[in-house]
Length: 145
Image (cartoon, rainbow, N blue to C red; front, side, top):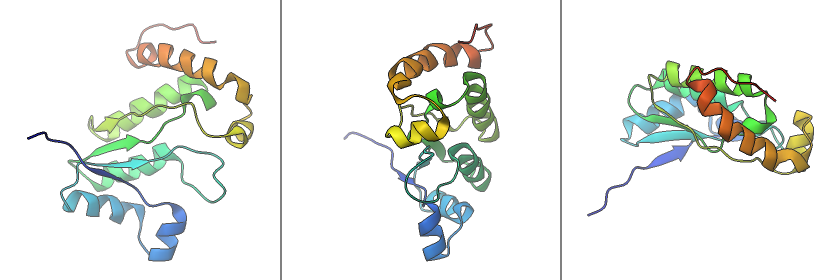
């Protein structure tokens, strides 16, 4: 029989407020329930309040000791690459190696405008990030664009 892992998306700000649950408690509950991971999206403009993914996941890492923490998805191309690498490395460190990094090219044009990055550049910038981030995380010298 095949095995698989099950995780959940952490509740957004509106759900936390409505249900009176903290991010800390939600992550802890997922671990206590025997799930394998918790995930958080990485968006700037979604039509409502949203937490910063690295900060939300750092909270989840502190509230748990076993389960994976993951991005669904992390958008490196809306950040300076050195900053993205620092966020990734920091999450890997504070989670004691439990980070699962999902990477994507982001949402719609509003999100890119909020980051000050032209929407038409999302593919090229994502390709560049996927090429350079592993080298940055490995501590290799990199000439940044």
